[in-house]
Length: 281
Length: 298
Image 1 (cartoon, each protein chain N blue to C red):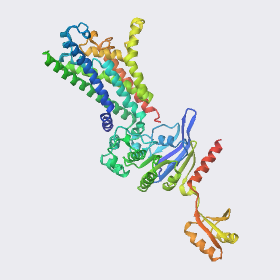
Image 2 (cartoon, chains in turn red, blue; image 1 turned 30 degrees about the horizontal axis):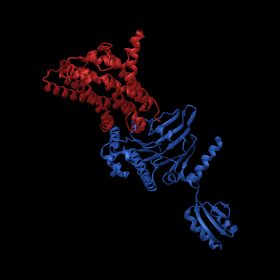
Image 3 (cartoon, one colour; image 1 turned 90 degrees about the vertical axis):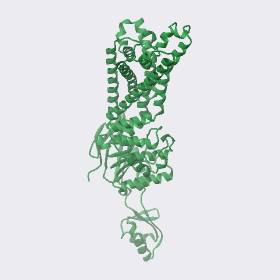
Protein backbone atom coordinates (compact mmCIF):
# COMPACT_ATOMS: atom_id res chain seq x y z
CA UNK A 1 0.00 0.00 0.00
CA UNK A 2 2.85 2.36 0.86
CA UNK A 3 4.51 1.81 -2.53
CA UNK A 4 1.22 2.42 -4.33
CA UNK A 5 0.66 5.58 -2.27
CA UNK A 6 4.15 6.86 -3.12
CA UNK A 7 3.49 6.14 -6.81
CA UNK A 8 0.21 8.06 -6.67
CA UNK A 9 1.87 10.99 -4.92
CA UNK A 10 4.56 11.07 -7.60
CA UNK A 11 1.88 11.23 -10.29
CA UNK A 12 0.01 14.03 -8.53
CA UNK A 13 3.11 16.03 -7.66
CA UNK A 14 4.33 16.06 -11.23
CA UNK A 15 0.99 16.75 -12.88
CA UNK A 16 0.65 20.40 -13.85
CA UNK A 17 -3.17 20.26 -13.85
CA UNK A 18 -3.11 19.58 -10.10
CA UNK A 19 -1.03 22.72 -9.54
CA UNK A 20 -3.24 24.75 -11.87
CA UNK A 21 -6.35 23.72 -9.91
CA UNK A 22 -4.64 24.53 -6.62
CA UNK A 23 -3.55 27.89 -8.03
CA UNK A 24 -7.08 28.65 -9.21
CA UNK A 25 -8.50 27.81 -5.78
CA UNK A 26 -5.88 29.94 -4.07
CA UNK A 27 -6.35 32.93 -6.36
CA UNK A 28 -10.16 32.77 -6.05
CA UNK A 29 -9.92 32.60 -2.26
CA UNK A 30 -7.59 35.60 -2.11
CA UNK A 31 -9.55 37.66 -4.63
CA UNK A 32 -12.94 37.12 -2.99
CA UNK A 33 -11.64 36.93 0.58
CA UNK A 34 -9.20 39.83 0.57
CA UNK A 35 -8.58 41.71 -2.67
CA UNK A 36 -12.16 42.74 -3.48
CA UNK A 37 -13.13 43.47 0.14
CA UNK A 38 -9.93 45.46 0.63
CA UNK A 39 -10.64 47.52 -2.51
CA UNK A 40 -14.14 48.08 -1.21
CA UNK A 41 -12.73 49.03 2.19
CA UNK A 42 -10.28 51.55 0.74
CA UNK A 43 -12.99 53.24 -1.35
CA UNK A 44 -15.00 54.17 1.75
CA UNK A 45 -18.56 53.82 3.04
CA UNK A 46 -20.13 54.97 -0.22
CA UNK A 47 -18.83 52.09 -2.24
CA UNK A 48 -21.67 50.19 -3.85
CA UNK A 49 -19.66 47.01 -3.51
CA UNK A 50 -20.00 47.12 0.27
CA UNK A 51 -23.77 47.64 -0.01
CA UNK A 52 -23.69 50.13 2.79
CA UNK A 53 -21.76 47.90 5.17
CA UNK A 54 -19.62 50.11 7.42
CA UNK A 55 -15.91 50.17 6.61
CA UNK A 56 -15.05 48.86 10.08
CA UNK A 57 -17.20 45.82 9.40
CA UNK A 58 -15.54 45.23 6.04
CA UNK A 59 -12.12 45.46 7.69
CA UNK A 60 -13.11 43.03 10.43
CA UNK A 61 -14.00 40.46 7.80
CA UNK A 62 -10.39 40.50 6.61
CA UNK A 63 -8.63 40.32 9.97
CA UNK A 64 -7.05 37.16 11.46
CA UNK A 65 -10.13 36.43 13.61
CA UNK A 66 -12.08 35.68 10.38
CA UNK A 67 -9.31 33.78 8.61
CA UNK A 68 -11.17 30.46 8.66
CA UNK A 69 -14.27 32.10 7.14
CA UNK A 70 -12.18 33.38 4.26
CA UNK A 71 -10.27 30.12 3.89
CA UNK A 72 -13.21 27.73 3.62
CA UNK A 73 -16.20 30.02 2.95
CA UNK A 74 -16.12 29.29 -0.77
CA UNK A 75 -15.43 25.56 -0.46
CA UNK A 76 -19.01 24.28 -0.81
CA UNK A 77 -19.37 25.82 -4.27
CA UNK A 78 -16.33 27.24 -6.07
CA UNK A 79 -13.44 25.35 -4.52
CA UNK A 80 -15.74 22.32 -4.40
CA UNK A 81 -16.10 22.48 -8.17
CA UNK A 82 -12.31 22.58 -8.50
CA UNK A 83 -11.99 19.59 -6.16
CA UNK A 84 -14.52 17.70 -8.26
CA UNK A 85 -12.44 18.46 -11.35
CA UNK A 86 -9.36 17.18 -9.49
CA UNK A 87 -11.05 13.86 -8.66
CA UNK A 88 -12.36 13.50 -12.21
CA UNK A 89 -9.05 14.19 -13.96
CA UNK A 90 -6.99 12.01 -11.65
CA UNK A 91 -9.25 8.95 -11.82
CA UNK A 92 -10.66 9.57 -15.31
CA UNK A 93 -7.21 10.14 -16.78
CA UNK A 94 -6.34 6.51 -16.03
CA UNK A 95 -9.14 5.46 -18.39
CA UNK A 96 -8.53 7.98 -21.18
CA UNK A 97 -4.77 7.31 -21.27
CA UNK A 98 -5.26 3.58 -20.83
CA UNK A 99 -2.79 3.64 -17.94
CA UNK A 100 -5.18 1.73 -15.69
CA UNK A 101 -4.24 -1.52 -17.44
CA UNK A 102 -0.54 -0.70 -16.95
CA UNK A 103 -1.05 -0.04 -13.26
CA UNK A 104 -3.36 -3.00 -12.67
CA UNK A 105 -0.87 -5.45 -14.17
CA UNK A 106 1.75 -4.58 -11.56
CA UNK A 107 1.54 -6.33 -8.22
CA UNK A 108 -1.10 -4.64 -6.01
CA UNK A 109 -4.78 -5.54 -6.04
CA UNK A 110 -7.34 -3.23 -7.61
CA UNK A 111 -8.74 -2.20 -4.23
CA UNK A 112 -5.26 -1.34 -2.97
CA UNK A 113 -4.56 0.85 -5.98
CA UNK A 114 -7.87 2.69 -5.70
CA UNK A 115 -7.30 3.11 -1.97
CA UNK A 116 -3.86 4.57 -2.64
CA UNK A 117 -5.35 6.93 -5.22
CA UNK A 118 -7.97 8.19 -2.77
CA UNK A 119 -5.41 8.50 0.01
CA UNK A 120 -3.15 10.52 -2.28
CA UNK A 121 -6.10 12.73 -3.27
CA UNK A 122 -6.89 13.23 0.41
CA UNK A 123 -3.29 14.26 1.01
CA UNK A 124 -3.34 16.73 -1.87
CA UNK A 125 -6.63 18.18 -0.61
CA UNK A 126 -5.09 18.56 2.86
CA UNK A 127 -2.12 20.46 1.40
CA UNK A 128 -4.57 22.46 -0.66
CA UNK A 129 -6.57 23.49 2.45
CA UNK A 130 -3.40 24.27 4.39
CA UNK A 131 -1.91 26.24 1.49
CA UNK A 132 -4.99 28.40 1.14
CA UNK A 133 -5.12 28.84 4.89
CA UNK A 134 -1.50 30.01 5.04
CA UNK A 135 -2.05 32.44 2.16
CA UNK A 136 -5.23 33.79 3.79
CA UNK A 137 -3.44 34.07 7.14
CA UNK A 138 -0.60 36.05 5.59
CA UNK A 139 -3.07 38.40 3.88
CA UNK A 140 -5.04 38.92 7.07
CA UNK A 141 -1.86 39.65 9.04
CA UNK A 142 -0.72 42.07 6.35
CA UNK A 143 -4.06 43.88 6.32
CA UNK A 144 -4.21 43.97 10.12
CA UNK A 145 -0.71 45.44 10.24
CA UNK A 146 -1.43 47.98 7.52
CA UNK A 147 -4.75 49.09 8.96
CA UNK A 148 -3.81 48.77 12.64
CA UNK A 149 -6.47 46.11 13.05
CA UNK A 150 -6.80 43.46 15.71
CA UNK A 151 -4.35 40.55 15.61
CA UNK A 152 -6.67 38.25 17.53
CA UNK A 153 -6.78 34.72 16.14
CA UNK A 154 -9.43 32.09 16.50
CA UNK A 155 -8.62 29.38 19.03
CA UNK A 156 -6.50 26.43 17.93
CA UNK A 157 -9.57 24.23 18.28
CA UNK A 158 -11.63 26.50 16.06
CA UNK A 159 -8.84 26.62 13.48
CA UNK A 160 -8.46 22.84 13.42
CA UNK A 161 -12.21 22.32 13.29
CA UNK A 162 -12.50 24.77 10.41
CA UNK A 163 -9.64 23.24 8.44
CA UNK A 164 -10.92 19.70 9.01
CA UNK A 165 -14.42 20.77 7.95
CA UNK A 166 -13.02 22.40 4.85
CA UNK A 167 -11.04 19.27 4.04
CA UNK A 168 -14.17 17.12 4.37
CA UNK A 169 -16.16 19.41 2.08
CA UNK A 170 -13.49 19.34 -0.64
CA UNK A 171 -12.93 15.61 -0.21
CA UNK A 172 -16.65 14.94 -0.69
CA UNK A 173 -16.65 16.79 -4.00
CA UNK A 174 -13.34 15.23 -5.02
CA UNK A 175 -14.74 11.74 -4.44
CA UNK A 176 -17.89 12.72 -6.34
CA UNK A 177 -15.66 13.57 -9.31
CA UNK A 178 -13.81 10.29 -8.86
CA UNK A 179 -16.92 8.12 -8.76
CA UNK A 180 -18.31 9.84 -11.86
CA UNK A 181 -14.98 9.23 -13.61
CA UNK A 182 -15.09 5.56 -12.69
CA UNK A 183 -18.69 5.30 -13.86
CA UNK A 184 -18.12 7.01 -17.21
CA UNK A 185 -14.46 5.89 -17.70
CA UNK A 186 -13.82 9.38 -18.87
CA UNK A 187 -12.77 12.88 -17.83
CA UNK A 188 -14.90 15.35 -19.76
CA UNK A 189 -18.37 13.99 -18.96
CA UNK A 190 -17.84 13.74 -15.18
CA UNK A 191 -16.49 17.28 -15.09
CA UNK A 192 -19.39 18.60 -17.14
CA UNK A 193 -22.07 16.85 -15.12
CA UNK A 194 -20.42 17.50 -11.76
CA UNK A 195 -19.75 21.18 -12.27
CA UNK A 196 -23.24 21.81 -13.63
CA UNK A 197 -24.62 20.03 -10.55
CA UNK A 198 -22.54 22.04 -8.08
CA UNK A 199 -22.87 25.43 -9.68
CA UNK A 200 -26.43 25.22 -10.93
CA UNK A 201 -28.67 22.27 -10.29
CA UNK A 202 -28.44 22.10 -6.50
CA UNK A 203 -29.08 25.82 -6.05
CA UNK A 204 -31.92 25.65 -8.56
CA UNK A 205 -33.47 22.65 -6.82
CA UNK A 206 -33.23 24.34 -3.43
CA UNK A 207 -34.87 27.47 -4.85
CA UNK A 208 -37.72 25.59 -6.54
CA UNK A 209 -38.38 23.41 -3.51
CA UNK A 210 -38.39 26.28 -1.05
CA UNK A 211 -40.79 28.38 -3.13
CA UNK A 212 -43.01 25.78 -4.83
CA UNK A 213 -42.61 22.44 -3.09
CA UNK A 214 -41.83 23.06 0.59
CA UNK A 215 -42.88 19.50 1.37
CA UNK A 216 -39.75 18.26 -0.40
CA UNK A 217 -37.37 20.33 1.67
CA UNK A 218 -36.18 17.14 3.41
CA UNK A 219 -34.91 15.97 0.04
CA UNK A 220 -32.84 19.04 -0.74
CA UNK A 221 -31.51 18.90 2.80
CA UNK A 222 -29.87 15.57 1.98
CA UNK A 223 -27.94 16.90 -1.02
CA UNK A 224 -24.15 17.20 -0.74
CA UNK A 225 -23.94 20.91 -1.54
CA UNK A 226 -26.53 21.81 1.07
CA UNK A 227 -24.71 19.79 3.73
CA UNK A 228 -21.33 21.16 2.68
CA UNK A 229 -22.66 24.70 3.15
CA UNK A 230 -24.22 23.80 6.50
CA UNK A 231 -20.97 22.27 7.75
CA UNK A 232 -19.03 25.38 6.75
CA UNK A 233 -21.55 27.54 8.58
CA UNK A 234 -21.19 25.38 11.67
CA UNK A 235 -17.38 25.69 11.85
CA UNK A 236 -17.09 29.39 10.99
CA UNK A 237 -18.55 32.66 12.19
CA UNK A 238 -20.04 33.25 8.74
CA UNK A 239 -23.60 34.58 8.54
CA UNK A 240 -26.02 34.13 5.62
CA UNK A 241 -25.47 37.76 4.65
CA UNK A 242 -21.74 37.40 4.10
CA UNK A 243 -21.79 33.85 2.70
CA UNK A 244 -20.73 33.35 -0.91
CA UNK A 245 -23.57 32.83 -3.42
CA UNK A 246 -25.14 29.39 -3.23
CA UNK A 247 -23.74 28.52 0.21
CA UNK A 248 -26.73 27.81 2.45
CA UNK A 249 -27.16 27.00 6.12
CA UNK A 250 -29.98 24.46 6.01
CA UNK A 251 -29.19 21.74 8.56
CA UNK A 252 -27.26 21.48 11.82
CA UNK A 253 -23.52 20.91 11.97
CA UNK A 254 -23.57 17.32 13.33
CA UNK A 255 -26.10 16.23 10.73
CA UNK A 256 -24.12 17.88 7.94
CA UNK A 257 -20.95 16.18 9.17
CA UNK A 258 -22.57 12.74 9.19
CA UNK A 259 -24.18 13.29 5.80
CA UNK A 260 -20.86 14.27 4.21
CA UNK A 261 -19.17 11.24 5.78
CA UNK A 262 -21.97 9.10 4.37
CA UNK A 263 -21.45 10.59 0.89
CA UNK A 264 -17.71 9.94 1.12
CA UNK A 265 -18.34 6.33 2.15
CA UNK A 266 -20.92 5.87 -0.61
CA UNK A 267 -18.70 7.34 -3.34
CA UNK A 268 -15.74 5.24 -2.15
CA UNK A 269 -17.80 2.04 -2.00
CA UNK A 270 -19.28 2.59 -5.46
CA UNK A 271 -15.86 3.32 -6.97
CA UNK A 272 -14.35 0.30 -5.28
CA UNK A 273 -17.09 -2.10 -6.29
CA UNK A 274 -17.04 -0.92 -9.91
CA UNK A 275 -13.25 -0.98 -10.19
CA UNK A 276 -13.00 -4.46 -8.70
CA UNK A 277 -15.73 -6.02 -10.76
CA UNK A 278 -15.53 -4.41 -14.17
CA UNK A 279 -13.45 -5.59 -17.11
CA UNK A 280 -10.62 -3.29 -18.09
CA UNK A 281 -10.98 -3.16 -21.86
CA UNK B 1 6.99 -30.30 -17.03
CA UNK B 2 4.33 -28.08 -15.44
CA UNK B 3 2.90 -25.53 -17.81
CA UNK B 4 3.25 -21.86 -16.84
CA UNK B 5 0.04 -20.99 -18.61
CA UNK B 6 -2.80 -23.48 -18.84
CA UNK B 7 -6.01 -22.44 -20.51
CA UNK B 8 -8.85 -24.81 -21.08
CA UNK B 9 -12.23 -24.15 -22.66
CA UNK B 10 -11.79 -20.40 -22.31
CA UNK B 11 -14.78 -18.38 -23.44
CA UNK B 12 -15.42 -14.65 -23.33
CA UNK B 13 -18.73 -13.24 -24.45
CA UNK B 14 -19.64 -9.56 -24.88
CA UNK B 15 -23.41 -9.50 -25.26
CA UNK B 16 -24.12 -11.46 -28.43
CA UNK B 17 -20.50 -11.42 -29.54
CA UNK B 18 -18.32 -14.41 -28.74
CA UNK B 19 -14.82 -12.92 -28.61
CA UNK B 20 -13.10 -16.09 -27.40
CA UNK B 21 -14.70 -19.46 -28.04
CA UNK B 22 -13.44 -22.49 -26.11
CA UNK B 23 -9.73 -21.76 -26.41
CA UNK B 24 -7.21 -24.29 -25.07
CA UNK B 25 -3.65 -23.07 -24.73
CA UNK B 26 -0.54 -24.29 -22.96
CA UNK B 27 2.72 -22.41 -22.51
CA UNK B 28 5.66 -24.40 -21.18
CA UNK B 29 8.49 -23.05 -19.03
CA UNK B 30 11.37 -21.47 -20.94
CA UNK B 31 9.72 -21.41 -24.33
CA UNK B 32 8.89 -18.52 -26.63
CA UNK B 33 5.28 -19.10 -27.57
CA UNK B 34 3.83 -17.28 -30.54
CA UNK B 35 0.15 -16.44 -30.37
CA UNK B 36 -1.01 -15.76 -33.89
CA UNK B 37 -4.21 -14.60 -35.42
CA UNK B 38 -5.69 -11.97 -37.68
CA UNK B 39 -6.99 -8.70 -36.25
CA UNK B 40 -10.09 -9.30 -34.14
CA UNK B 41 -9.36 -13.00 -33.75
CA UNK B 42 -9.39 -12.82 -29.94
CA UNK B 43 -5.66 -12.58 -29.19
CA UNK B 44 -5.75 -9.43 -27.06
CA UNK B 45 -8.91 -10.55 -25.26
CA UNK B 46 -7.18 -13.81 -24.33
CA UNK B 47 -4.07 -11.95 -23.14
CA UNK B 48 -6.20 -9.54 -21.11
CA UNK B 49 -7.78 -12.53 -19.41
CA UNK B 50 -4.35 -13.99 -18.67
CA UNK B 51 -3.29 -10.74 -17.01
CA UNK B 52 -6.49 -10.46 -14.98
CA UNK B 53 -7.75 -7.34 -16.72
CA UNK B 54 -10.95 -9.00 -17.81
CA UNK B 55 -12.82 -11.95 -16.37
CA UNK B 56 -13.59 -14.97 -18.54
CA UNK B 57 -17.19 -15.93 -19.15
CA UNK B 58 -16.25 -19.58 -18.64
CA UNK B 59 -13.28 -21.91 -18.74
CA UNK B 60 -10.26 -22.67 -16.59
CA UNK B 61 -7.25 -20.37 -16.60
CA UNK B 62 -4.10 -20.96 -14.56
CA UNK B 63 -1.10 -18.67 -14.80
CA UNK B 64 2.04 -19.58 -12.84
CA UNK B 65 -0.11 -21.95 -10.83
CA UNK B 66 -2.56 -19.28 -9.71
CA UNK B 67 -5.52 -17.32 -10.90
CA UNK B 68 -4.92 -14.43 -13.29
CA UNK B 69 -4.86 -11.08 -11.51
CA UNK B 70 -3.73 -12.48 -8.15
CA UNK B 71 -1.01 -10.34 -6.57
CA UNK B 72 1.36 -13.32 -6.41
CA UNK B 73 0.84 -14.08 -10.11
CA UNK B 74 1.10 -10.45 -11.23
CA UNK B 75 4.33 -10.07 -9.26
CA UNK B 76 5.93 -12.79 -11.40
CA UNK B 77 4.44 -11.67 -14.72
CA UNK B 78 5.50 -8.76 -16.92
CA UNK B 79 3.17 -7.68 -19.66
CA UNK B 80 2.53 -5.18 -22.38
CA UNK B 81 -1.03 -5.46 -23.59
CA UNK B 82 -2.04 -3.72 -26.80
CA UNK B 83 -0.38 -0.32 -27.15
CA UNK B 84 1.99 0.79 -24.38
CA UNK B 85 0.09 3.12 -22.04
CA UNK B 86 1.99 5.55 -19.83
CA UNK B 87 1.47 8.97 -18.26
CA UNK B 88 2.23 11.46 -21.03
CA UNK B 89 3.32 14.27 -18.70
CA UNK B 90 5.94 12.11 -16.98
CA UNK B 91 9.34 11.15 -18.36
CA UNK B 92 10.07 7.55 -19.30
CA UNK B 93 12.19 7.32 -16.17
CA UNK B 94 9.42 8.63 -13.90
CA UNK B 95 6.91 6.28 -15.51
CA UNK B 96 9.17 3.36 -14.65
CA UNK B 97 9.83 4.79 -11.18
CA UNK B 98 6.17 4.77 -10.31
CA UNK B 99 5.64 1.29 -11.74
CA UNK B 100 8.60 0.17 -9.62
CA UNK B 101 6.87 1.69 -6.58
CA UNK B 102 3.68 -0.25 -7.32
CA UNK B 103 5.54 -3.48 -7.89
CA UNK B 104 8.04 -3.08 -5.05
CA UNK B 105 11.04 -3.20 -7.39
CA UNK B 106 14.44 -1.72 -6.49
CA UNK B 107 15.42 1.52 -8.28
CA UNK B 108 18.60 0.05 -9.81
CA UNK B 109 16.47 -2.34 -11.86
CA UNK B 110 15.07 0.71 -13.71
CA UNK B 111 18.52 1.57 -15.07
CA UNK B 112 19.05 -2.04 -16.10
CA UNK B 113 15.86 -2.27 -18.15
CA UNK B 114 16.41 1.15 -19.71
CA UNK B 115 19.82 -0.05 -20.89
CA UNK B 116 18.32 -3.30 -22.09
CA UNK B 117 15.86 -1.55 -24.40
CA UNK B 118 18.39 1.12 -25.36
CA UNK B 119 16.38 3.99 -23.94
CA UNK B 120 18.74 5.29 -21.26
CA UNK B 121 19.66 8.40 -23.26
CA UNK B 122 16.06 9.56 -23.61
CA UNK B 123 14.86 8.35 -20.21
CA UNK B 124 14.42 11.86 -18.83
CA UNK B 125 12.34 13.08 -21.76
CA UNK B 126 8.58 13.22 -21.47
CA UNK B 127 6.74 10.14 -22.68
CA UNK B 128 4.55 12.35 -24.89
CA UNK B 129 7.64 13.30 -26.94
CA UNK B 130 8.60 9.69 -27.66
CA UNK B 131 8.30 8.15 -31.10
CA UNK B 132 6.09 5.08 -31.47
CA UNK B 133 9.15 2.85 -31.44
CA UNK B 134 10.43 4.41 -28.22
CA UNK B 135 7.00 3.97 -26.64
CA UNK B 136 7.08 0.28 -27.57
CA UNK B 137 10.54 -0.07 -26.08
CA UNK B 138 9.43 1.62 -22.87
CA UNK B 139 6.50 -0.81 -22.78
CA UNK B 140 8.90 -3.73 -23.00
CA UNK B 141 11.12 -2.15 -20.33
CA UNK B 142 8.09 -1.88 -18.06
CA UNK B 143 7.22 -5.51 -18.74
CA UNK B 144 10.74 -6.57 -17.72
CA UNK B 145 10.91 -4.34 -14.65
CA UNK B 146 9.91 -7.08 -12.22
CA UNK B 147 12.42 -9.49 -13.77
CA UNK B 148 9.43 -11.73 -14.38
CA UNK B 149 9.32 -15.45 -15.05
CA UNK B 150 6.61 -14.95 -17.63
CA UNK B 151 6.60 -12.10 -20.14
CA UNK B 152 3.43 -11.44 -22.12
CA UNK B 153 3.94 -9.13 -25.09
CA UNK B 154 1.08 -8.12 -27.34
CA UNK B 155 2.31 -7.01 -30.77
CA UNK B 156 5.62 -5.63 -29.46
CA UNK B 157 6.93 -4.69 -32.91
CA UNK B 158 3.93 -2.55 -33.83
CA UNK B 159 5.08 0.76 -35.23
CA UNK B 160 8.77 -0.10 -35.22
CA UNK B 161 10.99 0.62 -38.21
CA UNK B 162 12.95 -2.30 -39.70
CA UNK B 163 15.97 -1.67 -37.48
CA UNK B 164 13.72 -1.40 -34.44
CA UNK B 165 11.98 -4.64 -35.38
CA UNK B 166 15.32 -6.38 -35.72
CA UNK B 167 16.41 -5.10 -32.28
CA UNK B 168 13.11 -6.14 -30.73
CA UNK B 169 13.38 -9.64 -32.24
CA UNK B 170 16.89 -9.94 -30.84
CA UNK B 171 15.67 -8.81 -27.44
CA UNK B 172 12.79 -11.28 -27.38
CA UNK B 173 15.09 -14.07 -28.50
CA UNK B 174 17.48 -13.16 -25.66
CA UNK B 175 14.61 -13.23 -23.19
CA UNK B 176 13.70 -16.72 -24.36
CA UNK B 177 17.25 -18.02 -24.10
CA UNK B 178 17.64 -16.58 -20.59
CA UNK B 179 15.26 -19.16 -19.15
CA UNK B 180 12.35 -16.78 -19.19
CA UNK B 181 9.05 -17.79 -20.72
CA UNK B 182 7.68 -15.46 -23.37
CA UNK B 183 4.15 -15.39 -24.69
CA UNK B 184 4.22 -13.25 -27.79
CA UNK B 185 1.20 -12.19 -29.76
CA UNK B 186 1.83 -11.03 -33.26
CA UNK B 187 0.46 -10.95 -36.76
CA UNK B 188 3.97 -10.69 -38.24
CA UNK B 189 4.46 -14.31 -39.19
CA UNK B 190 8.07 -14.05 -40.32
CA UNK B 191 8.91 -12.62 -36.93
CA UNK B 192 7.16 -15.44 -35.08
CA UNK B 193 8.79 -18.05 -37.32
CA UNK B 194 12.19 -16.66 -36.42
CA UNK B 195 11.84 -16.40 -32.68
CA UNK B 196 9.16 -18.78 -31.43
CA UNK B 197 9.45 -22.38 -30.34
CA UNK B 198 5.75 -23.13 -30.50
CA UNK B 199 2.77 -21.30 -31.91
CA UNK B 200 -0.93 -21.22 -31.34
CA UNK B 201 -3.13 -19.91 -34.11
CA UNK B 202 -6.46 -18.34 -33.21
CA UNK B 203 -9.15 -17.34 -35.65
CA UNK B 204 -12.64 -15.99 -34.98
CA UNK B 205 -12.12 -16.69 -31.28
CA UNK B 206 -11.23 -20.35 -31.81
CA UNK B 207 -7.84 -22.01 -31.57
CA UNK B 208 -7.22 -23.69 -34.91
CA UNK B 209 -3.71 -25.05 -34.31
CA UNK B 210 -1.13 -25.32 -31.58
CA UNK B 211 2.18 -26.89 -32.54
CA UNK B 212 5.91 -26.71 -32.50
CA UNK B 213 6.89 -24.30 -35.28
CA UNK B 214 8.90 -26.93 -37.15
CA UNK B 215 6.16 -29.52 -36.79
CA UNK B 216 3.64 -27.08 -38.12
CA UNK B 217 5.79 -26.30 -41.10
CA UNK B 218 6.26 -30.01 -41.78
CA UNK B 219 9.39 -31.85 -42.88
CA UNK B 220 12.01 -30.22 -45.03
CA UNK B 221 12.03 -31.39 -48.61
CA UNK B 222 14.81 -31.57 -51.16
CA UNK B 223 13.74 -30.17 -54.51
CA UNK B 224 15.51 -31.75 -57.45
CA UNK B 225 15.33 -30.86 -61.15
CA UNK B 226 17.13 -33.61 -63.04
CA UNK B 227 17.19 -35.35 -66.39
CA UNK B 228 16.21 -38.05 -67.10
CA UNK B 229 13.46 -37.63 -64.53
CA UNK B 230 12.37 -41.28 -64.35
CA UNK B 231 15.85 -42.48 -63.42
CA UNK B 232 16.27 -39.66 -60.93
CA UNK B 233 12.95 -40.60 -59.29
CA UNK B 234 14.05 -44.20 -58.95
CA UNK B 235 17.29 -43.18 -57.24
CA UNK B 236 15.62 -40.62 -55.01
CA UNK B 237 13.10 -43.19 -53.81
CA UNK B 238 16.00 -44.83 -51.96
CA UNK B 239 16.14 -41.75 -49.74
CA UNK B 240 12.44 -41.37 -49.08
CA UNK B 241 9.01 -40.89 -50.59
CA UNK B 242 9.23 -38.90 -53.78
CA UNK B 243 6.57 -36.45 -54.95
CA UNK B 244 6.44 -34.81 -58.30
CA UNK B 245 5.55 -31.10 -58.53
CA UNK B 246 5.45 -29.69 -62.04
CA UNK B 247 8.80 -30.70 -63.47
CA UNK B 248 10.61 -31.06 -60.14
CA UNK B 249 10.91 -33.99 -57.78
CA UNK B 250 10.63 -33.58 -54.02
CA UNK B 251 11.93 -35.99 -51.44
CA UNK B 252 11.71 -35.64 -47.66
CA UNK B 253 15.30 -35.73 -46.45
CA UNK B 254 17.30 -33.74 -43.96
CA UNK B 255 19.42 -30.93 -45.42
CA UNK B 256 22.55 -32.70 -44.18
CA UNK B 257 22.02 -35.39 -46.85
CA UNK B 258 21.66 -33.02 -49.84
CA UNK B 259 25.30 -33.41 -50.91
CA UNK B 260 25.00 -37.21 -50.76
CA UNK B 261 21.87 -37.15 -52.93
CA UNK B 262 23.62 -34.95 -55.46
CA UNK B 263 26.65 -37.21 -55.54
CA UNK B 264 24.57 -40.37 -56.11
CA UNK B 265 22.56 -38.74 -58.92
CA UNK B 266 25.64 -37.38 -60.68
CA UNK B 267 27.41 -40.73 -60.19
CA UNK B 268 24.52 -42.43 -62.00
CA UNK B 269 25.01 -40.11 -64.97
CA UNK B 270 21.97 -37.96 -64.24
CA UNK B 271 22.22 -34.27 -65.05
CA UNK B 272 21.17 -32.25 -62.02
CA UNK B 273 20.18 -28.68 -62.93
CA UNK B 274 18.60 -27.62 -59.62
CA UNK B 275 18.90 -28.86 -56.05
CA UNK B 276 17.72 -27.00 -52.99
CA UNK B 277 15.91 -27.46 -49.70
CA UNK B 278 12.40 -26.13 -49.26
CA UNK B 279 9.94 -25.85 -46.42
CA UNK B 280 6.57 -24.30 -46.02
CA UNK B 281 6.58 -20.83 -44.55
CA UNK B 282 4.50 -20.25 -41.43
CA UNK B 283 2.66 -17.65 -43.44
CA UNK B 284 1.37 -20.31 -45.88
CA UNK B 285 0.13 -22.46 -43.01
CA UNK B 286 -1.42 -19.48 -41.24
CA UNK B 287 -3.42 -18.44 -44.28
CA UNK B 288 -4.36 -22.05 -44.96
CA UNK B 289 -5.73 -22.48 -41.44
CA UNK B 290 -7.41 -19.13 -41.07
CA UNK B 291 -8.96 -19.23 -44.53
CA UNK B 292 -10.30 -22.76 -43.99
CA UNK B 293 -11.77 -21.62 -40.72
CA UNK B 294 -13.49 -18.68 -42.37
CA UNK B 295 -14.84 -20.93 -45.10
CA UNK B 296 -16.16 -23.35 -42.47
CA UNK B 297 -17.82 -20.54 -40.54
CA UNK B 298 -19.27 -19.02 -43.67
